[in-house]
Picture 1: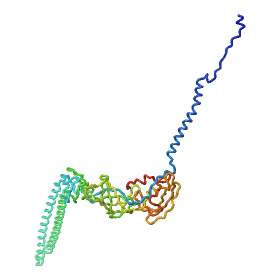
Picture 2: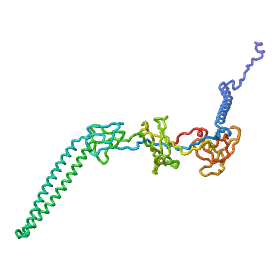
Picture 3: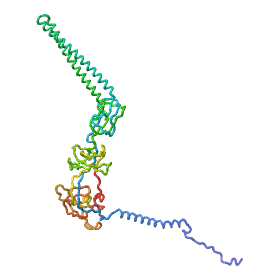
Picture 4: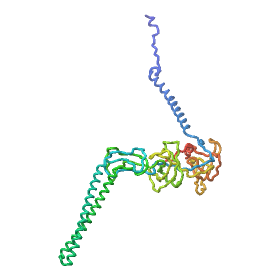
Length: 430
C-alpha cells in the first residue's frame, strides 16, 4: 500500500483540437468561400472575351472600302411602267327586250361576224303583238275610208244647199247645217288618218321588238365572254345585264400603261415600246405610243398618267386582262464615260459635298476617288456633272475623272448605298 501511496499520482492529459477540425461543416464552408471568387473571375473573363470578339467582328475598320470603276460604254435611258392588255374595240351586248332564251348561237372564243345570231328569245309574244297591231292598223284604215266617204257626202250636201239658197228653194239654216256637217266630216277624216299613223307606228315598234328578240353580233370579232344560258329570262331595263362581250380581232391590242409623273415628260407619241408579259417571258412584243392622256390617277400618294400603247399580236398571245411590263428607250449615249450610281449616292461621314458647275441639261454630283489600296488608300472628292442614267450607271458629262479610276461606293460608315445597289438593277414598277 505504501508503494501505492508513494508513487506519483497519475495525471490525465487533455488534447485541444482546432475549431475547424472540431466543426467539419465550418471547414467545408470556408473552402467554398475561398473557391467562389475564382469561378466568378473566370466567368467575367469569358464574358469579356466574347463581348470583345463580337465588337471587333461588328465594327468594320474605317478603311474597308467597297469600290467601283469608272468605265466607258453605252448608257441607255429607259422608262419602265406596268399596264393592262385590252382589246382595241370591245362591245358589251345586251337585250333591248325582255324574254326567255330559247337558243344560243355563239360561245366563248367563237369567231363571229356582223349579224350572226348570238341568242334567240322566245318570239311568240312578239309575233302576237305584231298581229294585234296589224289588226289595229287595218281597223284604222277602214275608219279612214269611211270618214272619206262621209266627207264626200257632206261636201255634196253643202254644195246642194248653197245652190238651192240661190234660187230661194231652201232656208239659210239648211245651208248652215250642211256646211257644219262638211266641217265635221273633215275633222273626222283627220282623226282617222292620225289613228292610221298611230297604228302604223305601233306596228313598227312591234316588228322591231320581234327583230330584237333575235340578238345579233354588232361587229366582226371574237366572243370574249357569255353570261346567259338557254332557259334564262332576260329582263330589259336601264341596267340591262351584259349577255355577251365581243372584242375585235386580237391581232392588235392596246396596253393601258401607268407612267409616273416624273417620267411622263420623257415620252411622246410614236415612240417604240417593248412589251413583255409573265406568260411568255422569252417573247418581246413590239408596240408604239399612240396617245398620252392628260387625265391623272392618284394611288397611295403617287400620281400616274395613262399612256396608250398599240401592240402587234399576230399569234394572239396577248390576252385581255394580262399585266404587261412596258420598256421605252428614251435616250442613248454610246461610248461615254460612266460612273456607278452608288458612287454618286456615297458621302463619307462629316464630309460636305463641293459644289459642281452644272451644264445645261445636266445635273451636279460628287464622287470620291480612292488613291491607293482599298485598305490603306485615301479618298478625295471630285465634283462632276452628269447626264442620263440607265438605273445602274450614269453618264459623266464633265469632271476630273478618267477611265479606270477607282471610286468609293461604300465604307460602312458614310451614306453609301452599298455595292449591291450599284450592281443589281430591278424594274421600276408604277
